[in-house]
Image (cartoon, rainbow over all chains, first blue to last red; front, side, top):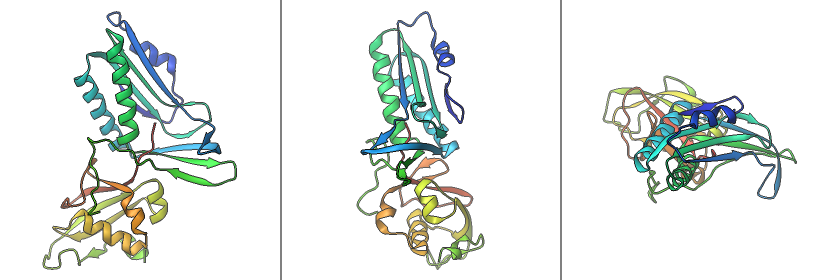
Length: 149
Length: 103
């Protein structure tokens, strides 16, 4: 299950989706909005996305994880719009028979999301300055602009 | 001037001026690039056979956006990441994407 939503992420519901009596391991990751970045106090954070492409890339990431690891369930939800400090922006849950697969797949999914999914965040700081955050942290599997650019 | 490329009937003849036929593409801008271009999308007519690089160079030049900014982006056509040498086709959806920052 993958989802991009403007609504608050309902963790209890997602946990129930992961339930599987064949699975001895459930690993989850919550990415939360923190109140600072680069030594500056963040008072507001908004996410926007290129929705059709973001869903397509998320689906590709999910399929890669399902192919690479023996996992039974995979959930990845990203919230967009304005998100209050302290609330969850991204939630990933993996269920597998043993823990190793879930740990590895969970880390893979969050890394891939941060590198590939067309979602951007804009931070507003205490002094009123507003900045789009752009992370130059692509992975090898992604198209790399060359020096000719 | 940026206004000259907002026109939905604008043409980029320099791309391949031996070609006669034009194609239509929809160009999308996100996040900081939307702010820089002061618009979220442009419907453009370009010369058939134009590459993404030719389109990119033209748009950035007309908008007066610095080359350093042009390097800090990725490109997608029809929801797939592509390289700048991609040849554009009629009705392509071209997206200029700043480095992503989700998660």
